[in-house]
Amino acid sequence: MIDRIKMVKRKMDESLEQLCEVSWMFSRHPEKDFTRKRKLSFSKLVSFVLAMEGGTLTTELLKHFGCSLDTASASAFVQQRSKLVPETFPALFDLFVRKTQPLKLYKGFRLFAADGSDIQIPNNPEHTSSHYPEANGQASYNILHLDAVYDLLQCTYQDACLSGDREANERASLCRMVDRSAVEKALIIMDRGYEGYNLLAHIQEKGWKFLLRVKDVGQVKGITAGLSLPAADEFDVPIHLSLTTRQTNQVKELCKRNNEFRFIPSNNSFDFLPRINRKYDPVQFYPLSFRVVRFQIMQDIYETVVTNLDPRLFPPKELKMLYAMRWGIETSFRKLKYTVGLLHFHTKKVEHIYQEVFARLIMYNFTELITSSVIIQKPNAKYAYKANFTVAVHICRQFLLGNVSPPQVEAAIRRNISPIRPGRSRPRNLTAKHAVSFIYRIA
Image (cartoon, rainbow, N blue to C red; front, top):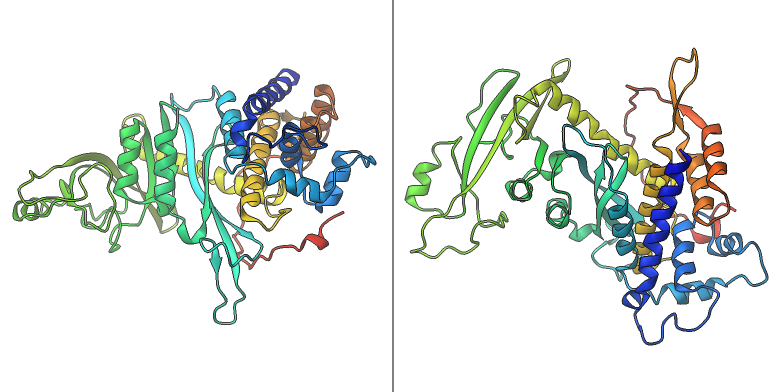
């Protein structure tokens, strides 16, 4: 355990050092920014943003500087952070992810889940891509949308995209994250919001495998709409489609063979066929193969998925188990928001909020890498035990700042554990969330 703790801290230090070596690349004015000796240098500024909790900015600075008379002011911090370009913390996030690639595989695959989550930020009418004006008695508000790829075996975020909710496109964001990934072999699990041929084609071109929950058989829209599928409650049917964006009389005749040909309308994006078709251009087809699998999950409740996994190695029973594992990214969002502190920002400027979002993602990964291997089986106990993530976040923040040693980290984490209760479920209660004013924060 101690060796793992030291390794994670070393990887974080290496990532920070690499970022600081090229700090000029992440400064708005390289010729003058961070050139003078100040209380918050480039490295101290980045470390401070990483370790911030949910308190007011002044109390956070006092904690960081040990209540010294030499503590930097809130104004000085705001001026320093304004010198950073938006790519600073995404670059640090990417460096840390690349340095901590795991050895955990599932039948030779990295096991990923993709999902998105909304983040409410302070009201800012000037940021039009995230602003929703007042309507029907509802006060105006701003929402950012976070799209993420999550490693289900290592319990860390692999990649992320952040945008205003009005401009958010989950499928397009995931296409970008798939295309830029350095992982060669992966299985990515997705929910119904990602249903679309273009995304499946991007995953296929990458050489990855997909497992996508789709709209059930018989619904008007969706991948299964128009396919000739069995009337049975459960089935596993291979489909080999030829997709085209060209609509001719010949194509119309071919598309009558529902399970072999499919026309993609011009209002649906597809990156592997020409957008504009001239009259005399030959018809081009894109081959896409997958299985449509329907299985029972509860009494009289069935789900339908599409996948390009081998049916011999991944029968329907295993697909059902794999899709259930996708819930790991849902619980990670809850930890990210309520435990790591993604809901508590220290600014109203959207560009600074972007800094804090990626800083929380880095802190989440840092904590999970340290705590995920702590599983304790007590003699004669009903359950196995794991690290209490809420306590572990506080411990890891202090460890990141160099205030505790690896043996202290291990001892503190092992002392604060909670039972693992598999199979628990509770309904998701959706309620309105409001931003907490900066003057009403925890002390």
